[in-house]
Length: 442
Image 1 (tube, one colour):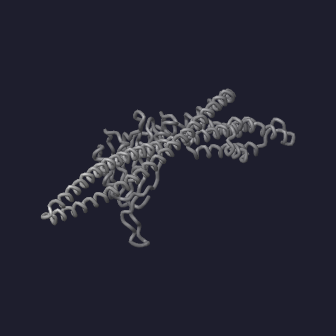
Image 2 (cartoon, helix red, strand yellow; image 1 turned 90 degrees about the vertical axis):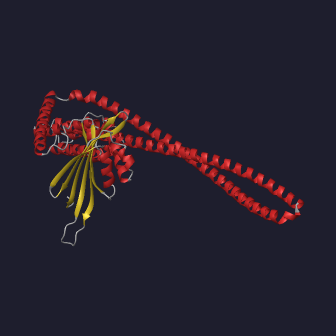
Image 3 (cartoon, one colour; image 1 turned 60 degrees about the vertical axis):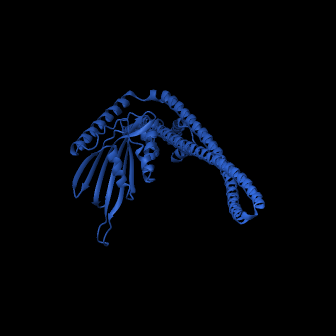
């Protein structure tokens, strides 16, 4: 069965065929069970459940709980129901539910991978478009410089003509005025030097014009290559969108065929267990919030964003983070709302020092923090309501260990960033800093 799952993932077998093949395996198992009709060996059900758990783990590894939450939750529900049916010794029902969980998990994994691929292609297209615009601006700048050199060349040629005429006039006067020949001869020599200098400048200008012509030709070639790459990646994006639409059609067909076969009693039982689980988690969350000072916003666990919006929010968080590590502070600050108020908590010698930062104060503090080299320790992403949350932990060595028996001390900076969608952009509307000074690297 594990070879069957791996084959479906590597060869892009339609997830809708997984359940059909699984039911064929059930039929073969019934025939080959030493003549036991209507009964299934426990080992066969255990193997199917283990395969379903492996398929769910593979889907979770590609962020399916976030990007394909409905399918992932359905797979988990079917797996739990299969285990319950096994305990109740309902072999046929347990095996069917296990294969259904495998099909749902495989579809969730494929859906999540395609969404991620689509987001990466979008980011690549945006980057290529920006590079293309930069090349166009460079070409225009070189054209302007080339026009300026042509104008300068024209001025030099006019000056050269005027100087040649002046030389000719002075030579004529030198022949007619023998008494002043020495003075005019010196002047002619000076003008000849000036003429040679102008000729040298003209030669250099012509060389620069040829060089700029070659640069413009090279930039045009790069621009054509960039345009072709943008078109090619746009085609790849359209192919991914078509594949996603195909998967959605398969999902609707599977839902129509198999959802009607779920027993109402099992649905009610699963609903009751889910409600009890939510109740327990809510109690745990309230107990945790009550034990903490009112620094973080209360997280309910509810999500009001689509999978595409979540992917776009994560991409915006990635751009914000890359701007920081590239020391591009202006690009980093461009992701904030103008009226943002950030919470800053400094923990020094087991004492907290809290303050509020507006955008101007935040910019000043970021300048101070960027003066040091921070190492990225960990980065996580969460989704709450209409916000995508990035939690980043950075460290830097504050006091090295004096010897092997001593402990090195660090400054640890935890940044929790809340970002939501504003029009077509994503902006940070809240941020929380927690800075631990001179502590072991926990």
